[in-house]
Image (cartoon, rainbow over all chains, first blue to last red):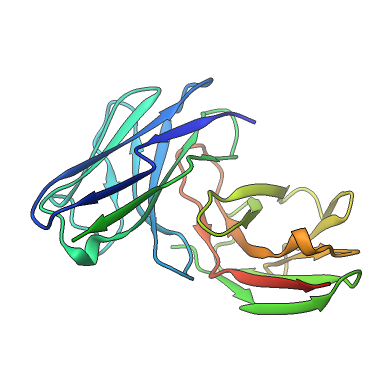
Length: 115
Length: 113
């Protein structure tokens, strides 16, 4: 299957700082990328859907000013957690889809810990 | 929007037995139903998927069945092995690459040696 990378794999930051997470599709063009967060022992909760070159569509309850998503190219999307707080600590996973099939390919995830 | 329910939340089986996980969905427009296996701290891995024009699909020890009328689909794992132990998620998606995938709540499968 296609390969999606995510960087960093883990990050620890102080409360109030901003953290940027990158998601890259390495061998295909991702017209759509999805950002999820996953709390321990819970399912994947979709945060937003981003299509290349357009604004992201956020799910209800997700603050767009806090979780900034950029999908500037067909191979890169970024999620920036602004002014992070301890309650933002979670496992963030991206996934990417091409435009010719339904299957989405997941990145390895980023473990964010906010102190 | 789509709502996917998954049962059971936990499942313990003896090695060699079969495991069945069931999901229901609400949106009749959904036509793609993937199943993912997720090990602790790792990314979800697609193990099998089915489209709405097919009623059953099998891949070695894994099979998925789909009942469009009843809007439910199931994962069947036969001859379970300890390495099958993981959390399994079902999901549903309408057509279109830009369409979001809605996940079930997950089933923690434990295969007892």
